[in-house]
Image (cartoon, rainbow, N blue to C red):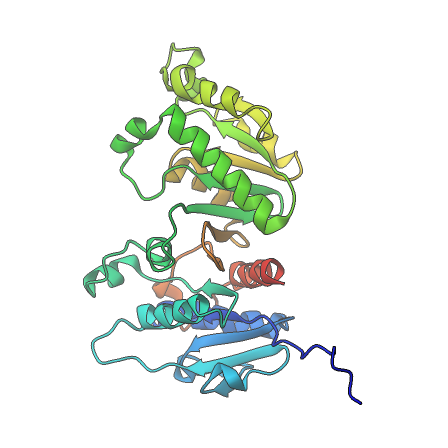
Length: 313
């Protein structure tokens, strides 16, 4: 008699990749990544083969039911007339993720202004993904081997930042980041927190946000989250890089991303926290000015694919 307890093998986890702006470097850096790396999981490119005039090492499929074994597949995904292609491909990938058909998405770079011109009411991938996933909390997180950065605010005018610096919000944000990182990576991280003002406020001399809100929030988090301390923004990044599994909390976009991109423009990854599926992307834009010239660096896209693959495995 056959063994009635034998388990039927489940299908492997699948990673979806979207090309981003079809007139940008997304298709090129995807193709180059596949030339440098064989995915350990099935990787499905949600797009169209015409985007890859020089060819791509991927098997064309019409349904995920055709996916078998490791390697790359291309899911032909037509675009309706008048629809922005990059948005159509992302929407299809999100549909697959929310249906449980794929475990993670790697998004190629888009032109935010092109989405806006097409009437898409999102400033980029992150807000759209969060709304589709009905995520009550989400955050932009930037990952490299020796530096991780969490942004307290993202695409927000500087004049609005100061009103956001409140003790309760800080406690909630850092606790959320800590919880998400433990869920995804399976271990604890140490938090280095930027001062908002020069010299972290100099005890109120150069601004009182640190004294009134940031420092009290960190005190409240003690014993719950591993906090290295509050440091002036001009010294915090070298300190954090010397500590394994450290995260810098930056209060606004450029405070965190100027140093991060100075150090990791080639290989940095944008990771969205708070979603029910993994989402990563290369840490750069579509670079239309160099598209089609064969000179785009694929390292960041390759890093995004590898990080997503590690997180869903």
